[in-house]
Image 1 (cartoon, rainbow, N blue to C red):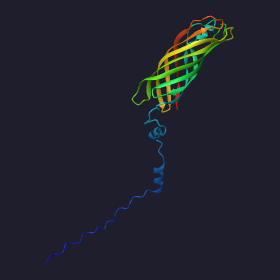
Image 2 (tube, helix red, strand yellow; image 1 turned 90 degrees about the vertical axis):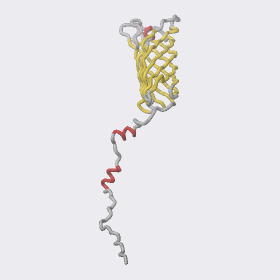
Image 3 (cartoon, rainbow, N blue to C red; image 1 turned 30 degrees about the horizontal axis):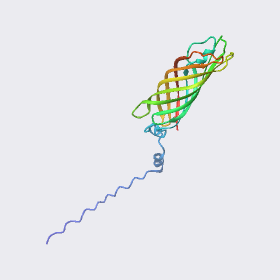
Image 4 (cartoon, helix red, strand yellow; image 1 turned 180 degrees about the vertical axis):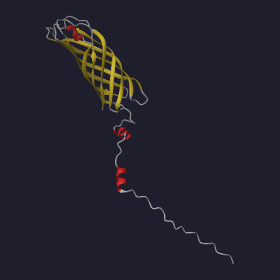
Length: 217
């Protein structure tokens, strides 16, 4: 008669109990982490591309030709003047069509006019000639054309009609999907088409440049 096999061994060691985090540890793990990566994600500084298009608005500050200086007795050279303006329009993925209003002016010492200036209404277009792989950096080009009025304060000259133009390449860098910084420099000019006395004056052509933020909604 055969012997029966021995019964299976029974382990006397206790099974490991599940680890339970203390309330203090759980509270620490639940707190948000304010490291650099989480801040970049919260501000959408990573993993984003610029918006394809929408309503376009930009503020500009720079230098431009000074046909208004034709009305200053002591300053008739085409030295660029300080100018500032606003552009509004619409934008697609690569092109923007915009209208703008701009003022430029300067002061003269010892001349017949203590101050001279010009106001221009622009119509133009801006296009992306080259774009980086992530879409944030662009080489752009713009063309603007529009009428305006030149005038001199403190002189007997009446306001005179003029036409301005600009042809400028530039750079655009997107800081956010909806915000970019634009900088352009190129050729600009103004031509006085009719003075207050009825005579025609010569135009000026010189460096034009501006820089400013742009917003697309």
